[in-house]
Image (tube, rainbow, N blue to C red):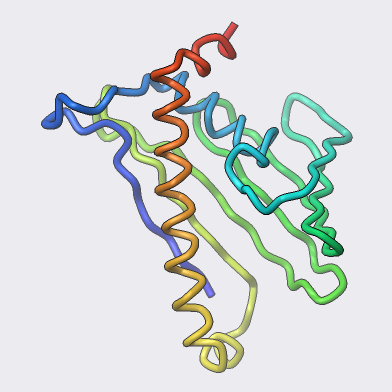
Length: 160
């Protein structure tokens, strides 16, 4: 299953929403990778290891389920999560790319790929539709949380 969608971050026609700067948006997307418990309430633990300026490895625990992944950072442009096949989990990835059609109107493109072939995608069509909806709601919620953090000044403090 491949699924992608685009979320507009700043709406210049809506004066009621606080605009996020590119730096705030970037820091928020990195924060989602570094502190996922702020965004995923049912996550029990996240341990980060092997950190470099290009990314890091994570070990995520959801009860008895443990998932290891790698996070790749392309500053002010892209955060990519790569999950290798492990136990009952197939290989997958999530790429969050900041797009700037105009300087003050960033979008984030969320691209999910699970590496399944067409036959598997067809067999999982109903389940995949549920996953698409859940992914989109999670991403909308991520932007909502980032906006709240920006209003509170929490993303600005992290920029230093």
